[in-house]
Length: 289
Image (cartoon, rainbow, N blue to C red; front, side, top):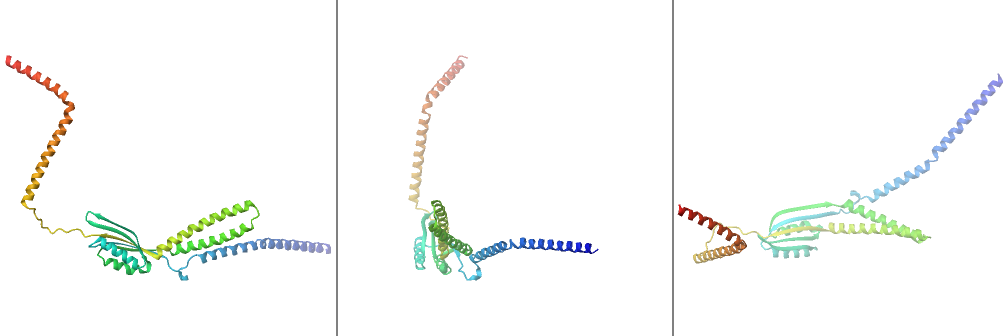
């Protein structure tokens, strides 16, 4: 009996030892990838934090980037003088005339001007334009490019930091192959940086200076409903000249028709001769009868 109890005790201890070793291995296996998972989570959190820092926030006090435009159609007494006045007004406001085109239309002089004025002065500048004549149409619009601007700027800064790291690696390169690969990446990064810089310059220009397109037209002559007749001698003279011109045109037409039919004269002669012979035979038969 004692041997049986002793054997049971040994078996129970052996089972407990096996279960303890298995649980410790599972704990090690579960904890081993824990460190990389934590590192990965930290990396993701850092990346998301960097993206949040790069993304513009409306509450961070960033300068708003607004592209403002306006389109006006004016009726002015003198298109040339109005165009000169607009050019002078744009210069005094700190802007300039980007394009100017004047031409003589069917209803009188017309003009198109594109003005660039500081965005902050646009609201006060438009009433000055309206004072030059009668406003027929007006349209003012704005486009918010704040997010695009600061996103582009953040991408440019990130690429510049990447460029600096490549330059450091280029100094430490040991082989020609490494140098060529690094220089290739540097060229690519530099191209992207220049593209983003060009876009930022365009956005700066569009947001700092508003664009105002002004169409100028001269009022068309308004009929009074009274028709003044010309003197009698002038009307007679005009009628005589019209008659002479009509006869001359008719004579020219006949001459042209004659020369046009001249190549067919042999055909007409043959047909006429045959017709004459037939008519003569019929006439002689009628006389005999």
